[in-house]
Length: 157
Image 1 (tube, rainbow, N blue to C red):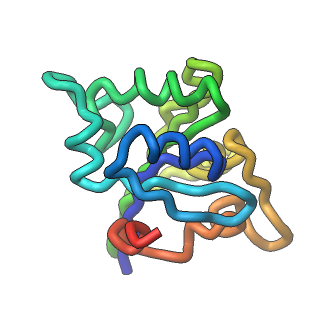
Image 2: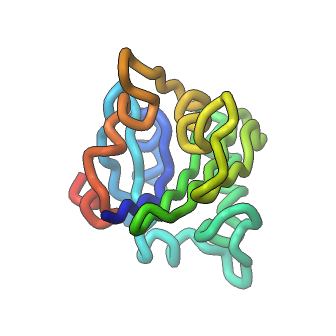
């Protein structure tokens, strides 16, 4: 079974501002007053700066997009996360910006490497944007990132 996610994650309020600035962005609600914006091909093309290379530490982070993330982070913490798993093998990447600075990451993990005591890259990023684990669930499950397995399924909001 596969799982794919490439998304911005922050408070719903902050991502509504992002979507107003970038009309092709679609906000999907999560639990705990968080939301995500899926990094679709259209959004990727829209926010990539001409001549910009993919950000080191990520599989698919638009060139020059770190400047936008830094600007948006002045209003609150905002994360970018990637997960790509198929047949039990895969990777996670995550980073968080706050107050115009990268405050976490970029972090990466691959199948076969144990997570540090702080948790997976995505769980660490979720904590930085305000998520809390609940009894029997890590941050990933607690905010509902297990709701969909494919990026396209998040696009309906």
